Image (spheres, rainbow, N blue to C red):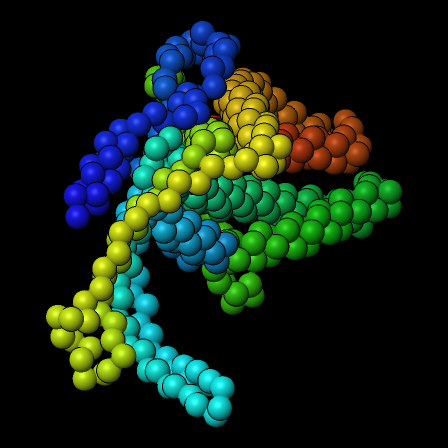
Length: 461
């Protein structure tokens, strides 16, 4: 009877035994001292942290965008599927954590056996048993603790992947929305230009009837109006496709969804200056990548523990009798205790192969993480530099817009005075429209790149 307490004491003592395998460390990466255009200072961090749920899209101050992005976060079917996969991963993680606990099983049994002897004799025996079996694997080498460590890391991967999916989909909704607003701005310019071209065409047709211009000027004016009307139809088609895309992103049916036109494009928000240096490392995809490294690191410890013996303690007890009426009597009580020590002898090559594979997976995960950091740095750098280039480009385009407006005014005056043909007016109108559309396009690009920057920073700053 003193044997089992000794085993239990030994098992409890071994809980603090050596944990084989390396401890997880975030792969080291060489980070630049600052971004190239605004001097944001970097600082070292041990590991990224998944950002809390935010409504980053509200920085644009657009109520329609707020509604669309919120609907995407709540109703997008792909995001709901990602949420289901997160719940699955968490359930599997909880299952893995139970490895540290002993198992208790009930194995009730009722059996009847018949023995036949020579000379036609026989004996029939009924057996009734209600045993409970307690079993516990002593974590001598930290295998179970590594399993729990890996389960926690995989849980973190699932959570970060869900957040990354949410960030990506809401960013897609914002990008699509600003593309729609750009189309609305372009459409408004086309409608305005068509109206002006028709006024000019009416003037030319009146002068043609008066004999002061030739048929060529009328034909040019008609061609310009028809060309713009054809472009307007193409813009309407693009708008329909963008509205349908937003419907799907927000979990709705295409065709029954509409968004009112809004031609004015707002000024992009200020995001780059003053962004804390560690926010880039808080990107959910980087958190998932470094958690994958942690899970792979735990697998190395599990594979290495297979080299060593495993100890399992067992305790059994219950009731067993040949007579059902005596099943719950004290005389029917049974108990057992014991332990087993298992050591692999002939499987060393297989264990070595599994260990080598675990090391290789960890190396691959570490390199993937480093590559993800490089990509994240590039995305942030591209967005910051892109915003700066686009801002300067829009400023130059606005100067060209003022010049194009002045040119059109002078051309109309010269045409009214009979100094030039209507072709000069047509060219000036065409140049002004192109300049206006380019200016609107640059503003839309700045809004889109602002979304890219927010996404590159992990959706929080």
